[in-house]
Image 1 (cartoon, rainbow, N blue to C red):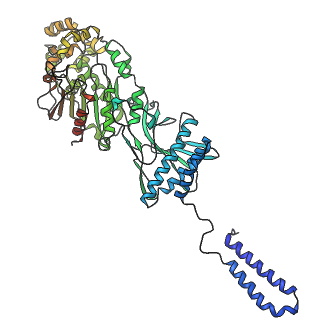
Image 2 (cartoon, one colour):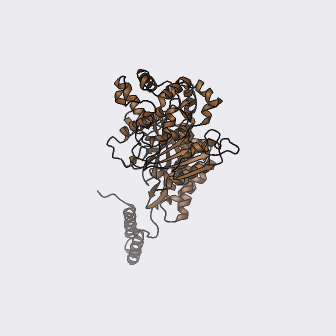
Length: 573
């Protein structure tokens, strides 16, 4: 049976009027029959008018989304109940979303502003009143329902997560500028414990996974409102009725949230004094999801430091859409109490382990054109990672080939791998900041001698080296043996300009396929000229693509002049 509509009802009413009119005339009898024809005709005309619907206005006109959004937005200041305010804000944002599809730019701008105001009120209410762990689900806001949907977020976020408004995350001064982009939505930080179900999980910081998400309210015109969240670095805009709408984003807040949680700086200092907690944290760490098409920038810190020194540079790279689209930043945590060559050996192992987890087939474009950036001790390691050792270092330690030495196969293999190496495959550029390529005279001065007494070294590789040296005294370098007896074996001792092995390693230069850039600090009155720790003669290398000397102390990683120049280098092909 066909359902009746408003037109059918009007027709039925008209016919009822016609029948009633005729019946009334019949009851009047024959005396009034002369008037019957005229009245009957009049009744027909009235019935005809009643049966024709009015064509000028529809029976139920849909509300204008922007008008409704304005109306609800104006109601909000008059509400005292938080839940009522949140419900009104939810519907306000939903109508504003529909208005984003307008073809008038001014209306779209107004709709975006209203959407952000109302979405922000709703998000604030939910963050305060909902459980601290979020997932895709349906929530109740007063008497209304709200669907929560995580759409296109980072693949490293799964299950439940904590959410924080990005604008409430304090940016430490060391990180510099907050990089935030205006647009639709409320920027948030999603934080979750790192995963455990995949080999690549161990490459995320133990502090957890922090990713940017942007939240806004959607409405399809008929269904319930949806609070949608996505990663603005993966999906920078959305489409509403054929109109592209840019999403708001804050890429600094997730970095700042992890920075605030980290204890790496304290662990790095404690490591020099014999602390073992840093050993648990050693390895390669990714700050974002791995991208097989983005070039890795591998950052190596200096003596007694941690990857936290790179917070400012990392933030600047993330804050540049051009560089962020091209590069992925990788940090390395390594102990700095052990000899430089052992540190180099370990970093190579960390990189190898990382590639096995990320790209077991070895075919990813990301393996090509990698960039090394190292400060101080990390700069020396970067140079050695870009160099071939040949027999230069081995001959400074032993006067016999590795095959002629006595010792267990395991110990011999360790010693061989430390003193024989090739440039790490795929590296095409290296940037050295205040690196003591020819050693630091400070290591021979009072502070260096004090550090030699305080620094404690504990590593299985050092134990293996000492066992091999003891078993082959007749083939060990006399100068090296004497130096070890006097100065010991640590990162401090190997920073001395005349330490036999380090002196030999000074001659190793990056292979021809690697372009390298040097940065050095120069303080007025410093003797010798330099940054107070590393002389200019030690920080500057011949053959560099460019050399930059700035008026600064040793901490070049905090100088905007230096970091701006690094960004210029990274923009080059």
